[in-house]
Length: 342
Image 1 (tube, rainbow, N blue to C red):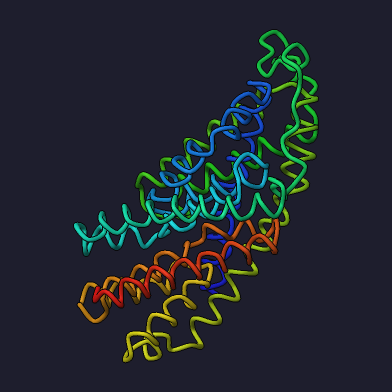
Image 2: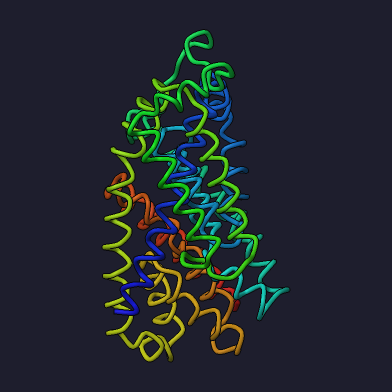
């Protein structure tokens, strides 16, 4: 029961951050009439660079942002692959704590490998798929004279005639802010992750409290809250429950000790699990010099912490596609390094 409560809390944290990021992206897109989206879509190198930076950021928040952008057709599949190769999820904190020098080097290597394979994926994918990025129907756009995202003289009137959707969204965000501040929602301790989540929630609250009714109904309520969030919550919850059962039943550490090539394959397969915990085994074993850096890199390339969980709700096919690509990339890089004696 205690574990289930923790899983639900973790699910709420992930869903909440994805939710507020989707609100903010919708807001920025309408505010700029989609110009930032178009400029980002036109510059592949900018996409790869931003995806690599967000992915390399310790924790899963950067990866969640990249998944959100991908689900709205803002970035390509290659950029998504870049971020997921670059990210180590929560294990980045552990690496920087117990092997800080090696950890920084590994994060840098992952970002480089991510950009390289992101480019390769887009070259192959665009050739076969004619530059389509599957996903939801994208971000709706308004002409500049049609949507005033901050109608100064109308905000008070909007609250006097508050709609159900505005009230529900504001109350929900208030509750999330309270849960985060009180430590009832992960992360429990005060750190940059908690501050980032609170900051984005406050921005989301401002957006919900000030935008005109038609923006709130069409974009935030119908598109984000009703369409995306329930699926993200349910898929994330289900995935975390399944991963908890699998990890408790499998003696992973006992399976990976021994043959280096066998261990490398196990590291890749374990990396397929959309969960941060299993990767810690390889970080610990590397820190104790039980395994070489090649095996740690395989695990780091394939695994992405919880970063891919929101993609399950968006597209199971894309989730599998990215995981398979990352597994192939990890095994290629690991095999080369292992043959070279690393």
